[in-house]
Length: 513
Image (cartoon, rainbow, N blue to C red):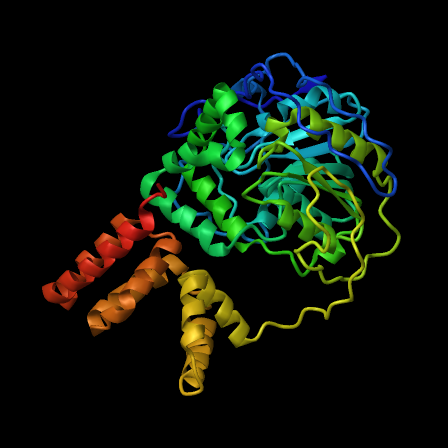
């Protein structure tokens, strides 16, 4: 059975189209790729997926507004991520739906960035025979209220608040990409709630922070069209995209209907997400599933997860890229059924798992063309976390504001003559002034741009124009700051600043070809 929890009708999603429905049925299938192989403790011999993709009824669209799950009323989208909520404020909740028998164990399924819960439509008929499947939408996705979440931990907190309100205490969890990051965070901070875990197309660290913050800069300047237009290249193999034009169009429209502010916030959340040093604390049975042709979070990232999580197994799905649940629905469904049927902890483990250091990402054996599942190797214990020093704090903030490439270039040019000065800059400028709570980073960028123009130190303006874009200022706002300097700092100084800023903005906000 399926249900959504009724609530009073809410206003349409502000500034955007209606929620986009699920993917269309697959066109006539190409020959099925090799079936994934299941190996390792507790896994039976595999059953090959059907010769043709699972033929399901056309998926139902999002429920009518009056049937959506409880959620706060939507607010107009903001181009910046929201500020962290005060500790005393009750956490927000997420838009969700249930499928399956009411008395079955709950299986929570999380979406990828830019998608909705409909990306899992092909798996629901099978999974809902065994579990009460709970799907949720990210903020601002699929018509959900546009309350941006600035971190993966905040998304996990909203999910826990939603489940608490429904009386769900223990559950299995499967999530794709950022949905997998939410699952890993739950396993680390709420291990007693998670019975079993599946991380699909996920990673302990998603690319580099610069990549995702740059994506946010492009969306602020150009909207979501560049992301929507290139989504099929990131999500599907070329052969699938050519053979399934209706699904490709579905994917493009799904991104277009997302709230830009919430998309940017999710990019910021992924930029800050890094659990490489904490993988050994994930103590639940974990399936790490990845498309063999995934170019976003590929097999190398999956192997890093398996090397660091004590009870983890790897599944490589042939003929699939980033959205493996859409591209190879039968194979993914078979893997999830096998994992959650055989690796479900009815109660939390008695003792916590000691911290472990993840092993190397590079495999020591040749890359296997078929899916494989194997236990992770043991790793030595790590030293516990220590209090962050001013230098460590300054290095972190400096990289977040100026970008890894800028800081790496500075470090590469540092020699014994300049290293003490760079240490002073890191501790004093970034570990002290930029780390204070009194002003947010957007405001500090406005002040810094003005000060550089006023003092005539235009050699630093290019780096801080990039920083201002990363901190959430739009090109229009940077223009207003520089116009203000023309009044109080002089036309010539402002004119030179405009020339520098114009070049940087054009470079940073032009979408990839």
